[in-house]
Length: 572
Ligand SMILES: *[C@@H]1O[C@H](CO)[C@@H](O)[C@H](O)[C@H]1NC(C)=O
Ligand SMILES: *[C@@H]1O[C@H](CO)[C@@H](O)[C@H](O)[C@H]1NC(C)=O
Ligand SMILES: *[C@@H]1O[C@H](CO)[C@@H](O)[C@H](O)[C@H]1NC(C)=O
Ligand SMILES: *[C@@H]1O[C@H](CO)[C@@H](O)[C@H](O)[C@H]1NC(C)=O
Ligand SMILES: *[C@@H]1O[C@H](CO)[C@@H](O)[C@H](O)[C@H]1NC(C)=O
Ligand SMILES: *[C@@H]1O[C@H](CO)[C@@H](O)[C@H](O)[C@H]1NC(C)=O
Ligand SMILES: *[C@@H]1O[C@H](CO)[C@@H](O)[C@H](O)[C@H]1NC(C)=O
Ligand SMILES: *[C@@H]1O[C@H](CO)[C@@H](O)[C@H](O)[C@H]1NC(C)=O
Ligand SMILES: *[C@@H]1O[C@H](CO)[C@@H](O)[C@H](O)[C@H]1NC(C)=O
Ligand SMILES: *[C@@H]1O[C@H](CO)[C@@H](O)[C@H](O)[C@H]1NC(C)=O
Ligand SMILES: *[C@@H]1O[C@H](CO)[C@@H](O)[C@H](O)[C@H]1NC(C)=O
Ligand SMILES: *[C@@H]1O[C@H](CO)[C@@H](O)[C@H](O)[C@H]1NC(C)=O
Ligand SMILES: [Cu+2]
Image 1 (cartoon, rainbow, N blue to C red):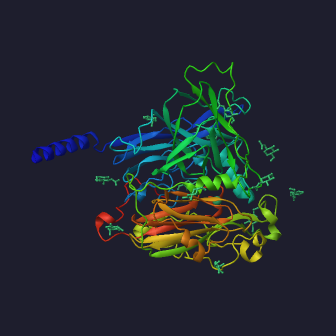
Image 2: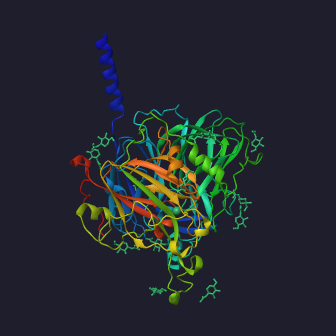
Image 3: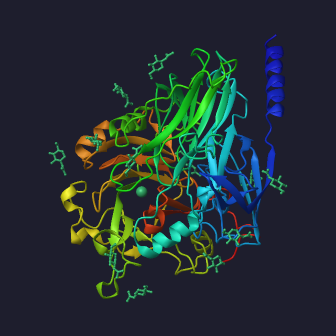
C-alpha cells in the first residue's frame, strides 16, 4: 500500500513536471519608426513592431527567452529586461556601454537568457538615450505550476502607465543636455498608450476595461513614465496588492496605488460595485521638481450590461494633491514580503560589505567666460549634474568596449573599480541650508564601480541629500532584487535606525523609491557575476550622473562564472 502511494505520487509528480517543463520563448522585435497621432498631432516615434506600448512577452518561470532584435530605426539602441535576474547571462542585460555596445541602425543582436527564481510582472525597455519613452512593454512571468499563492483571478490585465511628449523625445533630451538646464516635461500621462478624455482630441483615446460583476481581476501594473511617480485609483474600488517587482507580498488592501518609475505591482480588484462605469486615473506625485507635467490620465472600467455611458457619467476617483508625501510613503513602506511564497529569499544574516551612499543632484561648472544661454541653463547659471557619493557617473561611450567586456577581457581604461564605500565628507545631508553650499555642489565626473566578491552580502544605506534640492529618487539595481530593511526621513542614524530593520518579512524589490529628504536601507547577496548598473530610474538623472556599477567577481567554478560573450555581441 505504502509503495503504491509512493508510486502514485511519483507518477503524478512526473505528469505535473512534464506539463510544466521549460519552454523556449522565441520572439523577433523589429525596432522601427511609426507615425502615430496623440493630442491632436501626428508624431514619428520609435517602436517595437509599430506598437505603443510594445509587444507583451509571456513566459513561465524556468523558460528560456530568445529575442532577435533587428534595428530598423534611426537611433542606436539596446533593450533591458527590467528586473530579470540574468543569472550568468549579464551579456543580455542591456544598459548601453555597461553590458554591451549599442545596436546600430541596420544591425541586430539576439538576447538570450533563462528566467528563473522569480515570477510576477516585469517589463522590458530600451536602455539607450531616452528611447524607453516609447520602446517598452510588459514581461510577464507566470508560475511554472500554473498556481498563484491566491485564487486564480478571472483575467489578468497589463496596465502600463507611461507618458507622452508632443515632440521628438530624443531631441528634447539632446537639447536639454546641451543647455545644461531641465528638459521639457511630458505633455500627458498615458494608460496603455492612451492619454484619456481629459486631453484635447483624445476622447476616443481612452483605455477601456470591460469587467463582469463579481469577478476578480489582476492588474499587472508598470510605471514606464520617464520621470514621474504616479498615484493610481479606480473610483469606488479597492485593490489587494499581491506582488511588487515580481516578488509576492502579504496581501495589502488599499484604495490607492503609488508607483515609482521602474516599479511594477500586481494588484487584484473585484468588480463588486453596482453596474456602471468607473474611471481609473493616474496623476503625479512629486516634491522638489519646479516644473512638472501635472496632468491626469484616465481610462474607464465598464461593467458588462452597464447602461450606455451617455446616460450615466463614469464616477471619477479623487486623487491626492501632487505633494502628498504621507500617502506615497505609507504605500511605499507599509507592504511586507510574503515569507515562504514561491521564490521567497530570507534576509541574509551576515553582512560582508557595508556601504553608505549619498544620492542627489549637483551642478557642473559653466566657464563664466564662456557662459551662454545655450550651455548654462541650470540653476545659478551652471549646468545640472548629479552623483552618488559625490562621484558623477559618466557612461563610458567611445572607449572601445562596454564595461562588461572590459571586465571579461581585463581591459583597462574603460572604468575603475574604486567607487567609495562612503561619501568623501559627512555633512547635514538633508538640511536645506546646504543646498547651494559651494563646497558640496560640484561633483567630479568619473566611471567608477564597486568590486564585490562572488556571493558576498552587501548592505547599503541610500541617503538623499538636499544639494540643489531634495527629491525622491527611485534607485534601480540591475541583476538583483534586494530586501528593503527600513526607510525614513532626515539623516540616517545607525544607532537609532538600525533597530527598525525588518529582517523577517521585508519587501523584495529591484527599484526603491528613497523617501524625499530621507533614506532607505537595502541588503542583497551578490550571487551573479558581471557588471551591474545601479541608477536612478528618473530618466533625466541618468545622463547627469546619478549612477554607479557593481562589478561582481566570478565564483569558484565555471558554472558560477560569467560565460564568454555571444558571438553577435555588438562592437563599439
Ligand atoms: C514583429 O514583427 C515581425 C515581422 O515584421 C514578426 O515576425 C514578429 O513575430 C513580430 N513580433 C512580435 C513579438 O509580435
Ligand atoms: C525615423 O524618424 C526620424 C525622426 O522623425 C527620422 O529622422 C528618420 O529619418 C526616420 N528613419 C527611418 C528609417 O524611417
Ligand atoms: C539556460 O538553461 C539551460 C539549461 O540549464 C542551459 O543549458 C543554458 O546555457 C542556459 N542559457 C543561458 C543563456 O543562460
Ligand atoms: C462612490 O464614491 C463616491 C466618492 O468617491 C461616493 O460619493 C459615492 O457614494 C460612491 N458610490 C457608490 C455607489 O458607492
Ligand atoms: C498644473 O500646474 C500649472 C502651473 O504649473 C497650473 O496652472 C495648473 O493649475 C496645474 N494643474 C493642475 C491640474 O493642478
Ligand atoms: C502641498 O502644496 C500645497 C499648495 O502649494 C500646500 O498648501 C501644502 O501645504 C503642501 N502640502 C505638503 C504636505 O507639503
Ligand atoms: C503599516 O501601517 C500600520 C498602521 O499605520 C502600522 O501599524 C504597521 O506597523 C505598518 N507596517 C509596516 C510593515 O510598516
Ligand atoms: C565653450 O562653449 C562651447 C559651446 O558653446 C563648448 O564647445 C566649449 O568647449 C566651451 N569652452 C570652454 C573652455 O568651456
Ligand atoms: C539669456 O536669457 C535671458 C533670459 O532667459 C535674457 O534676458 C538674456 O538676454 C539672454 N542673453 C543672451 C546673451 O542671449
Ligand atoms: C552562495 O551562498 C548561499 C547561501 O548564502 C549558498 O547556499 C550557496 O551555496 C553559495 N554559492 C556558492 C557558489 O558558494
Ligand atoms: C544618533 O542618535 C543618537 C540617539 O538619539 C544620538 O545620541 C546621536 O547623536 C545621533 N547621531 C548622529 C550622528 O546624529
Ligand atoms: C552609435 O553607435 C556608433 C557605433 O558604436 C557610434 O559611432 C555612434 O557615435 C553612436 N551614435 C550616437 C548618437 O550615440
Ligand atoms: Cu533621481
